[in-house]
View 1 (cartoon, rainbow, N blue to C red):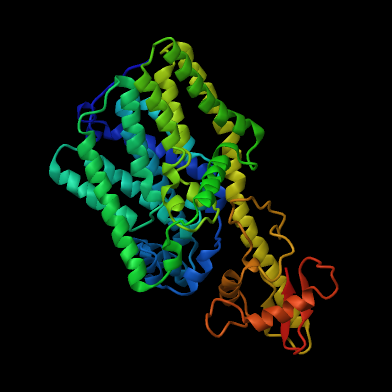
View 2: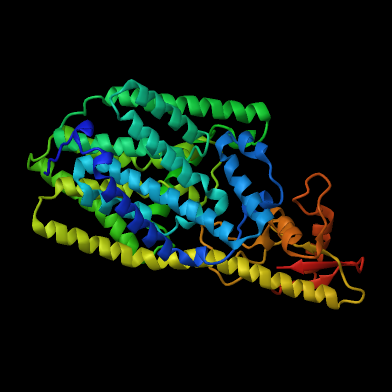
Length: 502
């Protein structure tokens, strides 16, 4: 087994290698933006972006226990007011910058244990996971990379020996919890990996582990408690903060989350085999080396415990709460399991030259699979938005040709009406929220208000929903002939409203 134990405080400080970190950041940033460029080149909104653009509601974020997340709806609302492509692109570049900062902080954190190049290779599994587009490119999800980067900054401060830095780090972790609780666990996951690898190397715990753990736990505890108090104080979204009630349901959800990361049906078979093979190789090496007494029972147990913890910790918040809604963005920290596996492999395999070549080939194989996936996934968001715009133009032209011209529109939306999720020949994946704005009330109403001259019929109690009576009348027309042809345009009985059946 390789043993490269380097104490946290004995490594070259980040100031001493500032140029190498800046160069790393620049190269990775350019590479990531180039891979995801289809989403940067044009204007597009998605899902929550519509409602947040039309109306800036700071209390929504506070009511979710995330007061710092107010910046996200503020930026979207400014995007709506300015209607400038450069500002829109600047927001997406900010998202990319935060995602890359998270990756750089992970490299900085693991470098003392495994060296610069191994740390960089490991972090590529996190950086280029193909479905990060939902957490990084979708503006409403900006808080995910922001909270992750903030929590890792707090962790680096907690790792300092001076108590004032540790208190500051705790405060920063609280801030991460005030931004996005799910992604704020990045520090806890990275801290677990660091100390687990250290134990595998040294067969002992790192000095200062207990003190670091106290300050880190304090940050999560204070941030979590205050977040919940905000939720119940404002009485907004209290149902989403409820604790999980069914252990069986959460166990099934946990299995599903890990299946979606390691063996998603949306992966090409080569990627599934690669991710599972790396985990299997770690398990095999540990068993063989334990049998040959090359690793102690404690070290072998530590590896098993690390793998088990990394199947749970990235999803800690969503497993504790009652809500079990599937979405790619809640898997933002899931690739850290592969980061751990990569680091463990470089501890368990002998330090031969062929290992470096083999590692490089594995990384090239991984990147050759995921880079095209990243690119088409980013492009799909733009495609859905542009196709929505094209259909809206057709609807407006039909309404204008009618005599007399129609000025109101009702859309048959889910759950009352659903012909298919894939309205624009863009494959809808199980955990993908890449849905057309025409599918749901709370997206189609602001979509029409912003991009159309046609007026939706809003509900009396909530302006972002359509009037349920009008929707039901439209659905009845859509289902009248049992044909359910795509994009039917029918005139309502009042002869003043156009009914759209997506």
